[in-house]
Amino acid sequence: MPAPFSFLPRAPMLAADHAWLRMERPDNRVIIHLALVVDGPLQLSTVLACLAQRLLIYPAFTHKVVRRGWRAQWQADPQFRLEHHVRQCVVPGGLQRSALKAWMASQAHEALPADRPLWDATLVHNVDGRHSALVMRVHHALADGVSLMHLMRELTDVAPGTPRLSPARTAQRSPLSPATLRHQPWRVLADAWRLATLPADRPTLLKGQPGIHKSVAWSESLPLAQVHALAKTQGTTVNDVMLALIADVLRQDLRLRTKPRPSAPIRTVVPMNLRRHGEEDQLGNRFGLVGCDLPLHLSDPLDRLRAIHRDMQQLKHSWQGQLALALVQVAGCLPQRLQDALLGLWSRRCTVIVTNVIGPAEPRTFAGAPLDDLMLLVPQGMTVGVGVSIVSYAGQLRVGFLVDTKLMPDCSGAAAGIKPAFDRLRYAVRRAPTDLRVWRQSRLKEASERQLKKAGHKEQRRA
Image (cartoon, rainbow, N blue to C red; front, top):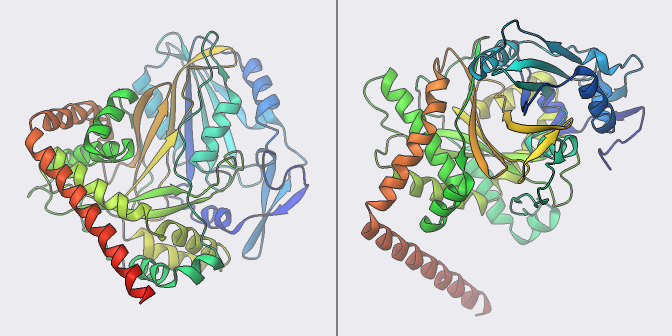
């Protein structure tokens, strides 16, 4: 079942989706950018036939948004024509991959027409001489990164001669229910207090009021197996390692542009998927945002990885993600000014948004052509101007940047720095075997102490 309002002519917009709809700003569009680069030429007629068969079964792509007071609903667009949403771009002489990114950046400030379904696509011909690219722009009110990656699996086919592989799954997270409030009231209240009292982020050149002009770049690919192996040796996750690499390149960017060097961490918000397994095909927004510190002030790459891992472990075992989703849902039911006040308070407390989306695990084809590259670029929204995405596809990882040029003029330098940052982290791991053993022993000791403390609390309750 593609969407919760399948085949209904009109349906109310869910509160979280409504909140994302109203986060749109003329200087900071809430639009997700997808780039599918295929090896070989594509014809517009072939692309239209593929989208008609596989995309239009999702009603959100044929329904427009009708605003009613401070609520909104999806309504079937009687004037819908696929040709109104898909165009082609033929550049004489072709485009290099870097020029494709610059072209995508030039589109980032353009609004999607409000009188039709909130998406469009452009077929770009002659990229790097022999490639084609389908660049899609999808409003965040339609879908989040998890559901869009499921959509990419539906739009593509497994490459011939390649076995189908199950994509990696994020951890299943319990919903915030009345039963949770009954059984863990103090823990939920403590997490709500931490969320409400989150201090303002430190001022840096990466933080400020965004402008209109954006920049787009993505890194060379990193072998997922190598990243996973490094994470395993450190007792961390692939996501922790990638956050450490992003912290490294942001540290380098600030060091080049400001003095003194970064002396404190900056806060990034990380989307936490709250879908149940099997619900990836449900469009809309089902994630909570949690705040993680990127330790830009630490000079050692291994220290940065350990600090990020500790922070992320605490967040994963808290209710902050579920509470953040509830906050967005409440905001979506309020008048626009109250939503702006409520969510503006949150956006001013962070500098960067980093999302990790899991793409197909095996090589794919789109419209019969091999899919060479897949990239999703995350929007920021409100007053956040630096968006970073971690995208996996066919055993490779890439890091994408969609940033405001006022706040980060050279995101191509940051993208190019991802691979050197990974090499620095691997070197730091190799040169510190003794420190690693000491760190592992300290982690085991901490876990043992937590177990003893928990057992003590149980004994006290029995007494």
